[in-house]
Amino acid sequence: MPEVEIKIGGRAFEVFCQDGEEHYLHTAAKMLDVEASVLAGQIGRLPEARMLLMAGLMLADKTAGLEDKLREMQIQLADKEAELSRMAARPAPPPQQIEVAVIPPELTETLSELAARAEALADAVEDKAG
Image (cartoon, rainbow, N blue to C red; front, side, top):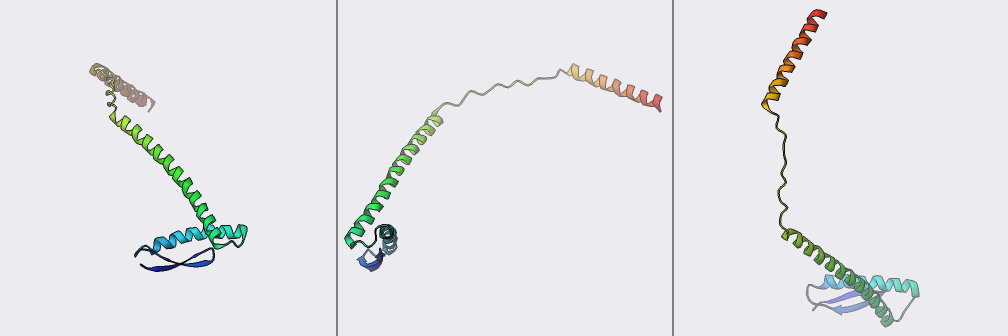
C-alpha cells in the first residue's frame, strides 16, 4: 500500500491508499486544499482539525448541490425518454393525398397553334418593318 504525501491548507499529511489510486487521492486532496485555502484566506490560521472539518463541510455542500442537480437532470431525462417512447409508439399519420393539375392535351395543342400564329405575325411585322 503506497504512502502518499498530500498538502492541504499549507500543511503536509502522509496518507496511505490502494495501489494505482494515487492519482485519485491527489485529486481529492487538491479539492480539499482549495476549500482550505479559501477558509485560510477568509478566517486566517485555524486548528488543523477545524480547518479539515470546515473544508470537508464546504465540499459536502457542493457535492449535495451537484447531487440535487443530477437528480433533477435524471428526472428530466426520464421524462424526455418517456415522451420519446410515446411519440415512437404513436401510429404514423395517414399519407396525404396530393392532387396535381393535369393539362388536357387539347389545351396544349391549342397553345402550340397560338404560339405558332404569334411567331408568324411577328415575322410578318418584321418583314414589313424591314
